[in-house]
Length: 135
Image 1 (tube, helix red, strand yellow):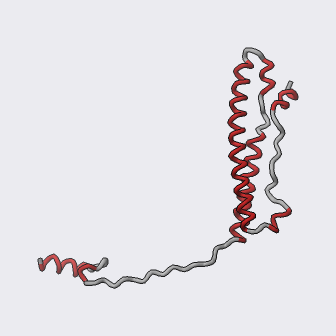
Image 2 (tube, helix red, strand yellow):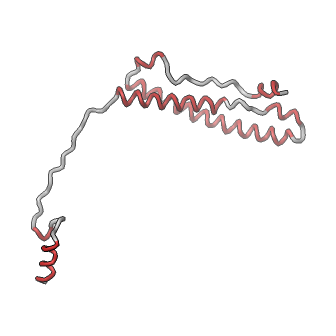
Image 3 (cartoon, helix red, strand yellow):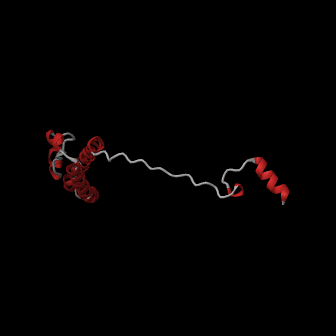
C-alpha cells in the first residue's frame, strides 16, 4: 500500500546548486537566472499550497473511504525543488558579489561654517551659561 501512495505525487527534480557553466556567467546572466528562479519558486509555492489542500481533502475523505488515502502526496516535490532553487539563488548572489562589484564611489560633505557662535550646533557650557546670565 505504501508503494501505491507514492504514485500520487510527482518525483522531485531539484536543480543542482553548482553548474559547470557558472564560470562563464556574466552579471546580466546571473541576474536573469536569479529572476527566473524567483518566478519558479513562486510557481512552486502555488503548487505546494494546492498539494496541501489536496492532501487535507484526501485525509478527511480517507476516514470514510480508505482508498482516498492512496491519493496522499508524501514526496513534497514542490518544496524540495523550491529549496534547491533558493540555495541556487544564494550561490548566484555570492557569484554576483564577486564579479559584479560596483565602482567605488566616495561621497564628501563640505562642512558649513556656523554663521554666528550663538547658532553653532556645538556650544560649550561656558557659552550657554553666559548667554543665560546676559538675558
